[in-house]
Amino acid sequence: MSSTGPSVGSARRTFQFGRTHVVRPKGKHQATVVWLHGLGDNGSSWSQLLETLPLPNIKWICPTAPTRPLTIFGGFPSTAWFDVGELSENAPDDLEGLNAAAAHVVNLLSTEPADIKLGIGGFSMGAATALYSATCFAAGKYANGNPYPATLSAVVGLSGWLPCARTLRNKIQGVDEAASRAASLPILLCHGKGDDVVPFKFGEKSSLVLTSTGFNNATFKAYNGLGHYTIPEEMDEVCAWLTSKLGLEGSSSS
Image 1 (cartoon, rainbow, N blue to C red):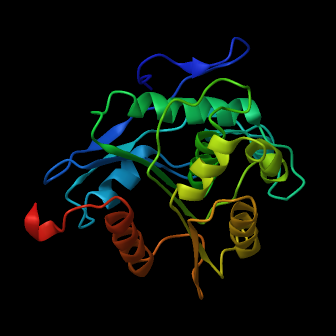
Image 2 (tube, rainbow, N blue to C red):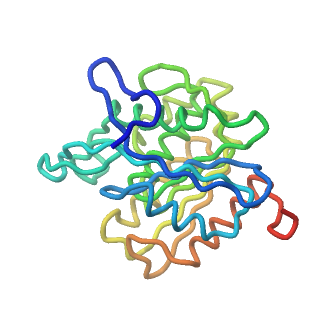
C-alpha cells in the first residue's frame, strides 16, 4: 500500500494509510468532501458510489485506512481508522488512532483552494471519525492538544457513532469560539432502525449528545427497516442536504 504524503502519527506509533481515490467534480468545483469508509472496506468502493451522485460541484477524496490489528477481532488485522475493543457506551476510545485519522483527513484537505468549502463524511467507523473531526474543529484542537487547522462547512455521518461522547461537554464549554463553531457547523446523521452492527440507539444517542452540547445545527434522520448499509433514499437525503448546506449550484447550472 502506498502512503499518501507523510505518514501521520505520534512518535510512539506511525500509521501507514492506504491508497486515496479522488472523484473530480464534473462541474464547477465549489466544495471538497473527504469520505471515510467503514471497517474492513477501502476508499475505492465508496469512490465508485459517490461518482454516481448528482453533485457535480463536489470533489470527493476517499482515503483508505491503515491495516492494523483490531482488538474487536482478537488482534486480526483489518483496515480501520482506529482500534475498537467493543461497541458499547463504556468502551475506551483509541485517542491516538482517532487523532491520527483526523489529522490525515486535514492533511488531505490542506491543499484545497481557499475559496472551496470543506466537508467530511463517512459510513460506520468512517462516520465516527467524521464526527470526531467535527468535535475537534469546534474545540479548535485534537484530544492531544494540537491545534485543529481546517475550517469545516459540513459533516455527514451514516450508521455511525460519536467517539469521546462522555468528554465532549468539557471540550466545548468554557471556550467562546468553540461554542460558536459548534452551533454553526451543519451535521447530518442518518441511521437505520434495523442496524445490527452499530445499533440504532448509538446513532440516536450521538445526536442527542451533540445537540445537548451546543451543536444546534445537527439533524438526525431515522430509516425504518434499514440495516448496516445505505439505500438510494438515504443518499438522496445526503445530496439534498449537502447542496443546501454547502450552497452548491444546481446540476443544471454547472
